Image (cartoon, rainbow, N blue to C red; front, side, top):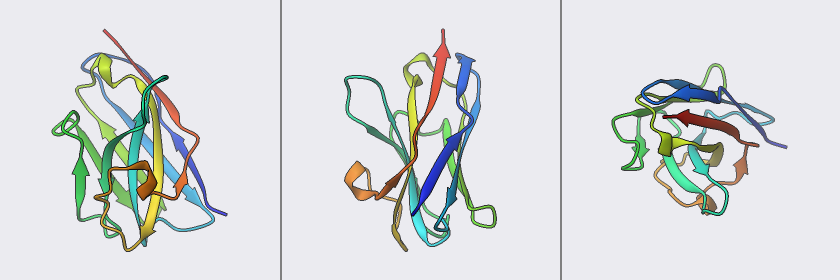
Length: 126
């Protein structure tokens, strides 16, 4: 059984930074593509960033490009989302997800990913 646990959420002022982490147990991240999504109540879960299994290829939603960076540390079995220049509209619950073996990380639909964490709240105050 794969278990993903996000951490690092919190409250930050606009313009600030946060780093989210997603640790896996039960199955290593190293051979799988990973992604971060976010969701606010009443709205669909939206793609934020994806990373291929090697960690070399990354993909971002237009709304976060240039501000967020996704990375993998296969030795620690952890995926990160560095979020800079945060805006109030970034306020959401952020989820990490694990996809397919040797995947590219380019999938932007929730159905492209198999396992999900429980989410971590990020609140950006203006």
